[in-house]
Every structure is written in C-alpha cells, then in structure tokens.
Length: 216
Image (cartoon, rainbow, N blue to C red; front, side, top):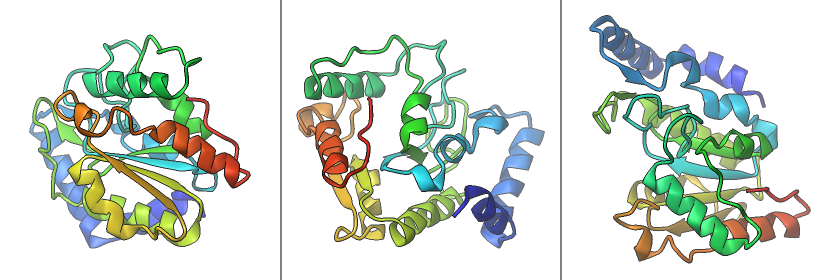
C-alpha cells in the first residue's frame, strides 16, 4: 500500500473535488490558509503506510502564523512550543526519566520513526479554529484510519480528547491497541492526560510484538 495511490484514487471522488473547490475559492478571496499548500499532506509524506507503528489523532491545524507544519501537534522549529505540545513533552518526561524536553516543537523525527501524526481536518483559516470543519476532510481522514485498521495490525492508536475518541469505532480493538485520555491542552490535561503513561505503554506494546520502539 502506497499513499500516492490512495491520494490519486481519492482525488477522483466527488467529496474531494468539493474540498479542492472550497480551498481554491478561499485562496482566490485572499484568505490565509494553514498549513502552507506544500505541507498539507505532510503526515503522509513523512510516515509511509508500511512504517506506521503509532497513530496520534489531532483535530485541525494550529491557526497562528508559521505554526502549522502539516503534522498533528507539531510546529515549525522557529516558533514557540504550543501549550498542548508542552504538556505532551511533560508527560513523556514522566514516562522516561532520561527524556530531555526539546527546545522546539517539530515532530518530524517521530513521524519518520512511524508515528502518524494525523489531524482529522487538514486545513484551517488563519485565527479561525475549526473553520474548515465539514468541508470533506473528515471523510478523507476517516478513510485513512479505516485503511490502517483493515490492512495492518498491532498498531497503537492514541485518542486524546472527545473528538479523537469518536474515531474509536473505526478501529478493531482485537487487532490494534486503542489508548484514550483527556486532551493534552491546559484546559483538560489534568483530567486524565497527565499520568496516562501512553508513551511508555505504547513502547512496551511495540517491544512485546517485536516492533522497534519509538525514541520520543
């Protein structure tokens, strides 16, 4: 399975045409859309289908200037680490005492190891969170989750927050591991995310199944 074939196939479908039509209009109207066009499919670019070990689901891209890089929870190296990602780093530190919190929020190194950092909505208008909800991206990303569930096994799905948890029905828990908690945002991290040990549990699961662990 190659993402390029999946993309070519979806590109022919009516719902995907609607996504493109919507985006073309937004660009034409001069609206600023994140991430930049060349980064929209970065989650698939940096994590090939064959290498997927863990799936982390985000909601939609960051809405501030220069933040969104096409990977869920990740940001470009030259911007401040967002609060949610800072809390993710804190939880990893509590899982692995030898983990040093990075000075930037770029998570490409995770993606290259097999962590699919997938937002369920792939674009957003500047400063307008969820502005591209229901334009069709959810159909596209649901198909990605279904494909992974259908053709792969022993994948860890990390579902943080109510919106991510809603995707659990797409995943077969007999084939794959589903871990859920509250969202890592400052508003909810204390209600289940902190102390969830998802990073430690994920690595133990991978090792148990003779899969190379993630260096977080």
